[in-house]
Length: 481
Image 1 (cartoon, rainbow, N blue to C red):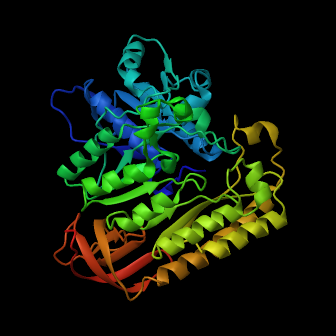
Image 2 (cartoon, one colour; image 1 turned 45 degrees about the horizontal axis):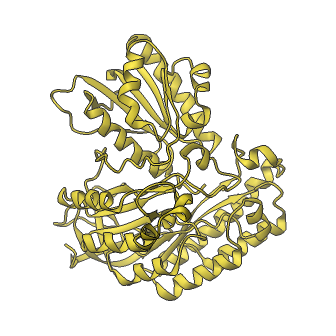
Image 3 (spheres, rainbow, N blue to C red; image 1 turned 120 degrees about the horizontal axis):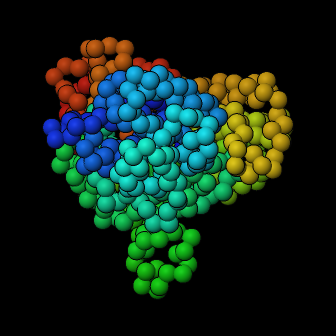
């Protein structure tokens, strides 16, 4: 659950400007978290150099790739349904090849070839550079599989194409993999051990995005706060590094500062943070630089120490509250969002009450809340009985959601009457006459278009709100414009 799933973008088909010399069409569809969508951009970049243009029309495709998620059973079932849709097209286009990428590919490996007869190619998250060779294999009529997890692959040398972008915001991956063996999570098994990307390649990508007109980037990783560059290699091997490597190592706080200084007028966000990895240095760096947005996504998962221990979370609720208190003290205007799992194995009404108490303590700006779903291959799936009845899970989840809605309203109302800088991202979904953007806290703001355009930084006077959206009137351009 560390990977935040944006339900609005699931199944998005991606496209980028065609190259005249490319003769084949790639249809690539993405599911899951922001990491998967960022990975699809890397894949499209690799295949653009192999003769593939992207298309959003399935019936025009020569190669179909679906970038998959394994975080919940629902995600896997959605992808299996999509494979049947591809199969219908394959009957009229016999040369069409289908590949499964990402976490589901890594979890099921060559079982996918047996279970889904339509699949020609199975590619794990660390094997995308091998795609040209794998495509040659399937073009020759053979199935192809590469699900080898890497100790050093970060794709830092691949300049991702920006697919279906608004030209304003972009993801920049800084870490891959995860060392936190949370008992509910498949990520360590599908994305491997944690390693960080060369900071110079991160800065080069961000500088290039600025040149292309992008105004905001989100530094991305399963655990961004545990970023650690000491010349390459797995984070767990840092203890074996040389004295010089340890002395010159760059942690997340330092990287965040380097990025903020590199492009002082570019907004910087990051996700996801883990409570045990977030240090005071990171919060102080956020407070020091105006272009680092005031929003921290900080999964709590449960308010019960007993359940946190069962989850193998590496923090207690008291330590979590101390971190919240430090954020509130150093960054009074900072928005905080959460992930919560309801109905984890053995969860009692007392444990559930502790989670509601945690919600009341923090009063999060928004959150991502799920009923527990057993995932094959996780420690919880192997060792723990899914013993909380489904109706109980749903009732507890509905109580969590109801309380979070109250807090969303409470936090959103705090912005009313203030003047806030908003980066225009596009047209409002509800009105062609209004722009939509976000403030520093990541709250959506809508306001009349007037003469402003996408990509402008605008000072907006907030005069009204719903529980999730601020409404205002533009006053003028902000100093960042």
